[in-house]
Length: 311
Ligand code: FAQ
Image: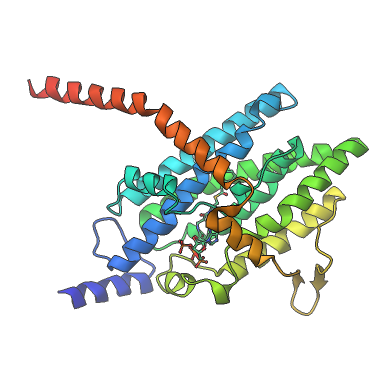
């Protein structure tokens, strides 16, 4: 029976037929998906924090309304992804608790502070830009609920990326002070954004199996390269520079070559030792505790409704 199930699963993967929640799947496939989708969901909601830091200080009402809408979108992305993870048999409460207990990760990028208004433009442009490159590939992930969630998320991320670029274009066309603020934000975010794609392929423990299962369609290095190739011309169009002395266009391969990422920094950040790790988790723990009365109220309401229906 198990052999038949395994063969059926492999045939679907081979034929690019989505695996759906009620289909048989290997335990390791399920576990790996809960890990990746859960961490992805956590990233979306932790990612709200650096942007929320600037909500009260957005320079105009228009910028504030856009930022508010973007942050709400990120909450929505978290909800789609927690729901997708739940279709695999975990509970939202369990994986959320694992985030709070530091047993599950979230994207390294959100452990860097948002120090200036330019950071908000750069987060929309570069962070969402990197997220799109990664997530467009995930629209064809082999697990149906994950792939479908990604389609809607990518549409919204495209809006985020465009609004970010529009915000940095305004700064790039502004005063010398505004230009300097933008350059400083690019300098601080460039390398952490490249780290979003994960370790080099040779050091990525999950990649080979995730590629074989078609959860990942492109490797970490392939997606990072695609992001660099897409983004360098955008930086040039702004009249800004990239903080990488080794960055050059290589005509022979048709790609940019770029310098070595500081992997020691990356591993420190994902171990919990980044600039903002403690602050981010403290904010989430406080939110969870402060929201206890809402959960209790919702449960009491639900019990009351059930009792009324069965009466
Ligand atoms: N940060 O073997 P691999 C966004 C971990 S959404 C932290 O290569 P994998 C939208 C990895 O989990 C951004 N940890 O792993 C937004 C694993 O640890 P584990 C989030 C990282 O899974 C914008 C270990 O290292 N996007 O930004 C990172 O095959 C603005 C070994 O790595 C996603 O999550 C990292 N950067 O590949 C929101 C996309 N990289 O689990 C708000 C979905 C690696 O063994 C504001 N995820 N690790 O303890 C993926 O595509 C993959 O999970 C990768 C990593 C590519 C991130």
